[in-house]
Length: 118
Image (cartoon, rainbow, N blue to C red):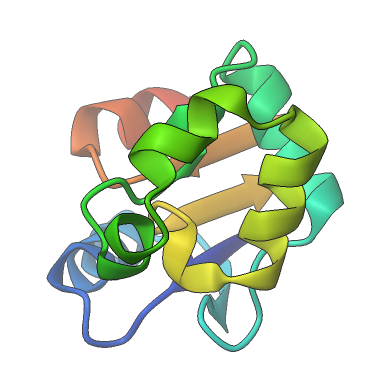
């Protein structure tokens, strides 16, 4: 079963949940703000995304801008960036899906279908 980290007021998250339900994919939902993904989950996602740490960040979010992450992120170590994400769910690009060998963040129906329906 996949774990989907969501924010209830996020329309993209609601669309992702509707897609999962339409496709009869069982999932466990977690509130991303209250329970951000663990470092191990983020590390696995980073590996799947080829080490591109920026892909894990909600770059359009208010916290990202308020913390000046656009300028700070390029100089951060992966360990520091992952620790920051694990401590602040607002910084994680959502929805964030975690399962063995699967990492999805953001909602793209075609990408989700390729990953979850095969």
